Image (cartoon, rainbow, N blue to C red; front, side):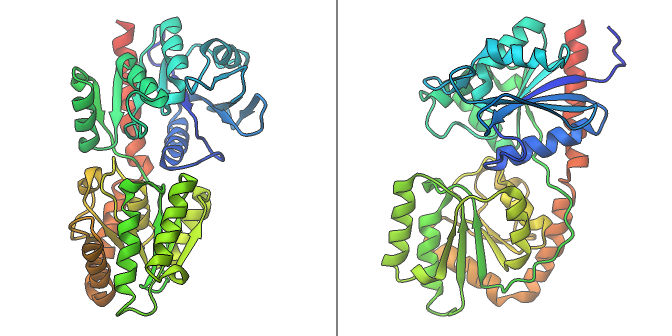
Length: 376
């Protein structure tokens, strides 16, 4: 085998442009496209929203195989794609023998294991977060399988690495920390400082309940404060949050937007004056980095992986996840324009270090190393 030839990798992700639900899809899309631009040959196996198998070729270096989540390709009880039909679909695409499998989504645990065994190649699993439904849930079991079978586990933060080491003893020597990247942005926020934006899943660990109560506290002294919440979650929890806003007397101050495409969210940033990240835990938090790149002042906790790129020099820090602390942090941002201006300068500098052209080569270096080891 010619070691100098370009890498041929298969990327397995449930989300890929334009079918993006959250941060996983954003990362999988931009990282994969960045790698293909370095000369790597990439075939993306991803889910299809059309209900049919579809192939596309974005050029000689990037192909996609979109798989419907029907009984032919997907097992609903295990919430995973079926190995045999997916591998047949990949073969029909003339993708060639891969040098490496790169997995983003737990739905591809069985396919990755089968491909790794069939082709005798390394598997890299990028763990975006620990399965939220628990280790005994179908996604949790799929994740455990990926962690057991992966040659290398990449994570976006040291905090996430610690979480995996604790849950999966013996995995520590296979973990590599590579942060997520961000697209290069140059826009400056023109929104009113009191026009607040939250983007993310609607789950309790995101601190949304405390944020809503904080808006109620703020509204006593800042009459023009408003909050837009962009995201989705379980219907029951969404209803609880809306009822909470009514109970707090601020329903008219909160605008609810169902989860929008990443492109739509990027267009929203410049019209807001502040992005709020009140999370109790985050494996990384791409939204915080996107705010920095878009020139929007950030008010954020330092939970989990956030503290690895967010600090008091580039953001207004929320010291603890309770409504008075969140309200005070937002008020500090609103009443200190000069401090905010200085933080925006540092935030843009921070975001520049995380641009995809700087992050993607770290993955390519890892892939080349694993291929070399696999050849011996």
